Length: 258
Image (cartoon, rainbow, N blue to C red):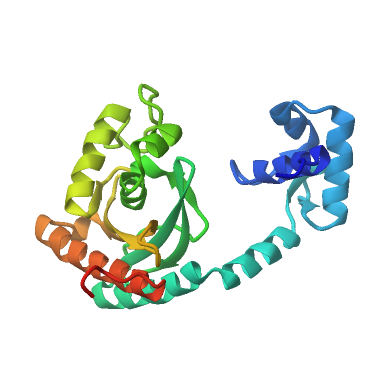
């Protein structure tokens, strides 16, 4: 592996800060968060702004947000990522069948990132967006993906004994409880989230596998509690599994015996 270039690393560290919070930062805030010299931050921010990676926020002197260049790069990445493109098509098909919100997500660290979303046509539906990041342990897609990891990989993301953040009163906050929950998911092959990331929404999710049989994503169906029931949960679990199976097939996965 080649040597990392410190200036490039610092520039990328700055860009990644904008993934959190409200998406705007000032140079002093960047300096404080990264512990870099003020002059270094000023030079890097000036360079990033000159290349359209950052732009100044209108009517907020000294504050920056991401510019058009990261969007262009992200769009090109999405175009080349078969998983995202195929995921959108399958999510659309599943959503048309159940008329509920369908997501496809991938795991990054201890979070999930939604790479595809298709809304239901109901007036009451889940408010979310492709590109959003959430703690994996609070979502059905995240728990499905965590359940697919080896114990070593899971421990690297969620250390034993470290408390987990809660998004609602129903969120799992104990790594030990989460591991018990993941064992059930492995056995069932389906993950269920009941008001753990949103107090008004429950979800079911199934695993998406690539041509090598590895779990690379998860597909979920999200339902407001006013339309949720045990019977509905089982119905949607079957549909999520079917949709995830279709997406897996598009990625080249072949079931044993198929």
